[in-house]
Amino acid sequence: GQNIDQPTEMTATEGAIVQINCTYQTSGFNGLFWYQQHAGEAPTFLSYNVLDGLEEKGRFSSFLSRSKGYSYLLLKELQMKDSASYLCAASTDSWGKLQFGAGTQVVVTP
Amino acid sequence: SQTIHQWPATLVQPVGSPLSLECTVEGTSNPNLYWYRQAAGRGLQLLFYSVGIGQISSEVPQNLSASRPQDRQFILSSKKLLLSDSGFYLCAWSRGTGGEKLFFGSGTQLSVL
Image (cartoon, rainbow over all chains, first blue to last red):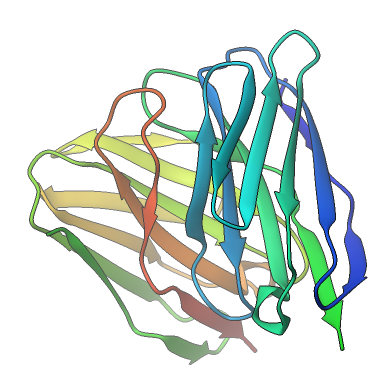
């Protein structure tokens, strides 16, 4: 079976750092995606990790440990516009299907 | 560049009525196509995916069906909607091999009353 877990909600203040953890147990694994989704909108791609280690893209970084079935998304210098749901998703087969976690709602306060 | 169009944006339908949601992709050929549903406060659930014309795989048993009459057209249908069919429906495409990111349409908010 497929199981992808991430916290339901996190709150942080503007300018701070927040780390969203994701653990996964899947029958197959190609890599780990992170998407951002604002309320009522479609998810937009943030990052993709296929090898162990840290990938940095501006204020956002993503980490993967395949042996531990673990990833995190790090959001630095938080801005109000970063308030959104962050979805962890595992690529589990060669057909391009993604299995999504339930999402972590990040609330940025002034 | 590639674009994905999904319509309508919102839909309110009575229980027992039919449903047809359409999605088209431009700027690419032979994409993998997907229908996801997102219930309020929940994650994305994969409903159907297609790797080619007329090829549909269903992920969960349900009241819905999908069709792919053309390479870049994907349709989600139901003959009789249930209350439990309410949700946010998202069409997506990818280049089709493992590890390719999904590009999502803008979504359809379906309310079945």
